[in-house]
Length: 128
Image 1 (tube, rainbow, N blue to C red):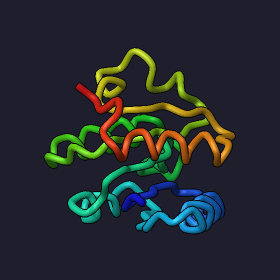
Image 2: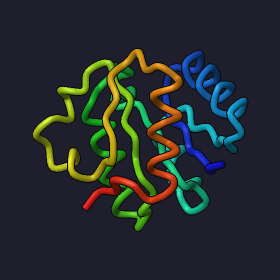
Image 3: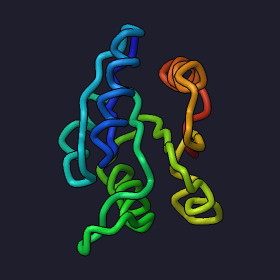
């Protein structure tokens, strides 16, 4: 099973997804905000992030998620990144779109997420 980093500012969604992934045998690290992600990257096989994180005014902002994607790649992390978002169009057409392995629109069925993790953790569809 995979070592997964799960990042979302919605604590309820974060805990729910973590429980479901752990019940499927995965080891899960949690980050409740974008700035908490970087320390976990070295040990993560798959990174799953929300796209909209609070900006400096506390408002959900896709720019924060795009910045996080760049930081993940600039850190040297080559793990596949799955973006889960209610607004996947925020990523469409951006340079960061090519830095992620999969974009999934909320709500995401756990079976679909587990399938993506299984594929990506074994080397499928990594970003170029």
